[in-house]
Image (cartoon, rainbow, N blue to C red; front, side):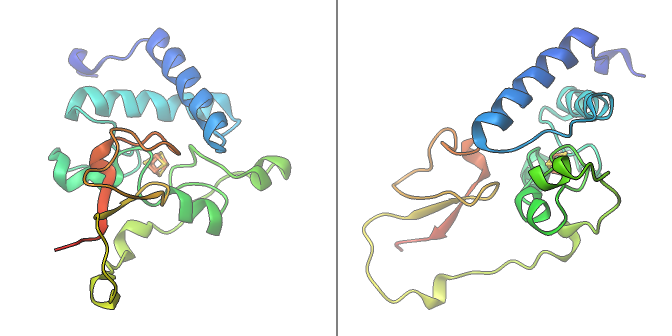
Length: 168
Ligand code: SF4
């Protein structure tokens, strides 16, 4: 491995504990298979060193952040995959049902490939004073001039928000 991208066990341990704490606080679960989870976290940390952001370890990143925003972990597809399959595409996050029933995550279709961009712009016919922002990771919605620095629900950064309804 390129020395530049070397990740130590201490870094993995720190990130594991951080992600586990955040997951618990936000109502999510990391995969209880600690070895597997730590391998994914190592890949996330390597991607963070390589690209400057922790892109999904199971998808090919372009290296241009604007193009990869939807696959920065936690990706835009995590929550729907948790609902539909009980785990995210990589299996880093799993549902309580999967944990309770000791189900092993397996290969699922990549939602990114079939995602269709929808716009609600044309269906709005009432006047609003502030733009409405939507967190693409967890769906949190707020009305304000700018999105929050961090999503209060899932802690995703400001650049993971999209305009849901514009006032222009
Ligand atoms: S939530 Fe899962 S599928 Fe999405 S980026 Fe993170 S590891 Fe990959």
